[in-house]
Length: 253
Image 1 (tube, rainbow, N blue to C red):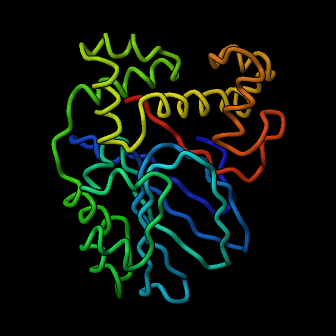
Image 2 (image 1 turned 30 degrees about the vertical axis):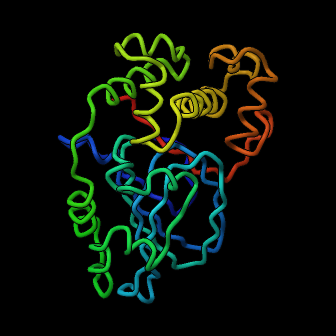
């Protein structure tokens, strides 16, 4: 498991036949606090409520993030969430994928995008109630080239050249980029950079590699290159990793 804040509980699920859900998670805050959430290029469908008013809920939908953000919470705040696989973004956002990046919809805006979420208000919630609504809404076929590209990108730690990846899929880099933008909301290069960032961060925080060694193993040209990437996606330097991070687990397949 990955380092997670006190009170946070994440349950990893095996991929569904349609590869739509990467993980389900829940969070219950025992005390006021805050957590820095790192970008992972995924979309989440979240339901927030408070333990004293469990039937009053706020639905939240996040687009694929490319920058870190801070979430503050009070004692008793609770969330249920489904993290979708990156290729499921377009099915969730429908025709609004182009506007989804770094966007968060709350309340009625989230319901307008996924109307079945309105059915959750007034219930004692469980993930078993939330999941079918999301899965019904995100059912669609996915180009197999995209799923293969995602698997290769993760297997390479984001270090594969875009021309090499496109050649492996028998398409041009322009076609590959259009495929990524249409389905994930991100360019192929940005998605690869996110994978590279997370892998290198894991080498520093979990494997305890020295920063210079992590930069080399992560595929960065030098320490300065890695520092720029950490500043872009995390807002911090490799030598100053904040203790209150929520680190998503990114699956290669």
